[in-house]
Structure formats: structure tokens, C-alpha cells
Image 1 (cartoon, rainbow, N blue to C red):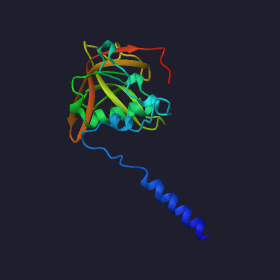
Image 2 (cartoon, helix red, strand yellow; image 1 turned 30 degrees about the horizontal axis):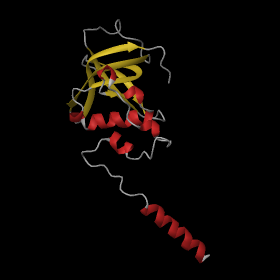
Image 3 (cartoon, helix red, strand yellow; image 1 turned 60 degrees about the vertical axis):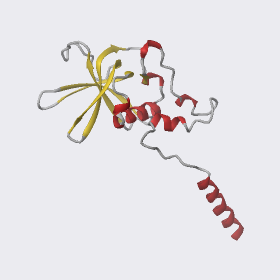
Image 4 (cartoon, rainbow, N blue to C red; image 1 turned 45 degrees about the horizontal axis):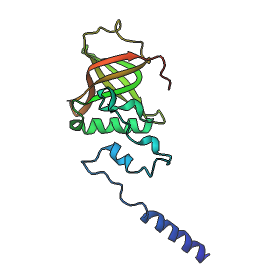
Amino acid sequence: MKKTIFIAVTAAALLLTGCGSTSLSSDDSVADYYATMIVDDTSAYASATMPDTSSDDIDIDLTQLDSNMIYAQVYDMVYNGDKYLGKKVKVKGPFSYFKEDDGREFFAVLVSDATACCSQGIEFVLAEDHKYPEDYPEIGTKITVIGKFNYYKEDSYTYCQLIDADMEVDDSLSW
């Protein structure tokens, strides 16, 4: 019995000490943090590597990331917005619309985590004047949006948005 307890305690101690440091400094991005967890290209996490987005002058192509990485990247963009200001971002997801009591309208593409329990809307402002509902798809329609990253603060909240954006309805997208 003592031998079994000793083995269990030793195994637990080894597991705890083998983890190493995984803390984020304020200079790290969430995407960089997850990238350090990738062992090699044959690991189960290989799809989490950042994609090559050199084509089409896209700085951040969220369409090439798996759902965990998209959510992590968007989280980092919201909380470290200065690092992303002016960068060209491409994102896909369902279209969403919201109208405030004061008449302000907000258009967004929704990004969900892997379990689809949490979602983050990325607001977008189209490059030209458009009118809702005539110039927009039905709520929930699959869209791809490309625009320049911007953020703003209202009260104690930070909101990210893609400005000068182009939106394309994409019937080929599937979730």
C-alpha cells in the first residue's frame, strides 16, 4: 500500500514539474502563445500554425485558422488592438445585425470557438454607403469580410471593427 501511494505521489510530482512555464507576458500575442505549444508539423496541433497570408496583401487571414485559433486571435486583437491597427484582416462567418435604441446600426461577422458556446462579433463598416436591409444579406448568411482593423472604446468596453470593408456572400462556406 505504501509503495502504491509513493508511486502515485512521485508520478504527480513529475507531471507537475514537467509542465514548465506557460505564462503570457504583455508583449506576447495569444497566437504566439499557442504556437509555442506546437511540437512539430506531425503533431495534432499542426493546424494551429499561423498561415502564410502573403497573397492578396492580407495581413491576418482568419479564414485559414481552426476555430480555436480564430477565437484566440480575435481575443488578442480586442485586448492588444494597437498591434493590429491598420492591418488588413480577412474573416468569414455568419452575418449579424444590431440596432441600438438611439438608432445606431452595427453589422458584424460572428466568430465562434470550437464548441460554439462562445462567439465574438467583429463589427465591419463597408467602404461605400449601404442601406440596411436592402444592401445586406439575411441575418445568419455566410459571409467573408476583408477590411482594415480598427478599435474604439465605449464606456469601459473595447470593440474591434474592420473599416473600409468589402463583404461577399459566400454560399460555398459550410460550418
